[in-house]
Length: 108
Image (cartoon, rainbow, N blue to C red; front, side, top):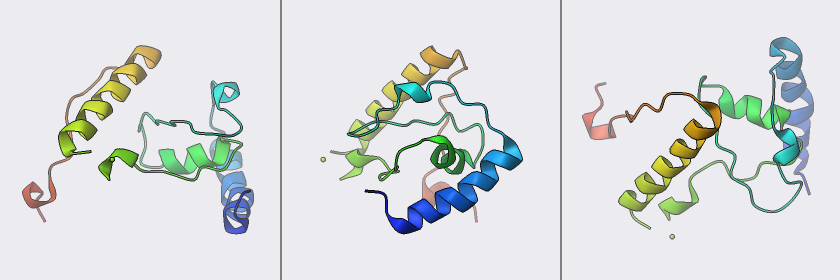
């Protein structure tokens, strides 16, 4: 069941995003209506998550990496690289192996 606040946001914000930007979406038929799924955006924009929620017909309940709890950072990095390689194969986009710096390395 879709939470009421999620449904309201999808109706208001989602509709506004779809009308204002008119995103082009390919492959929505491949998103299952229920059960687990991995939705991996290509992050061409910082607003990818908002647009993903606006166009996917089902409720998106988990927007983070579930491995950060069941494993260590090396396992998370390995899986992330595998998913990114699969996205590259599907889209033909160049894979850039550059990651955000760790917090302690970032400049204020």
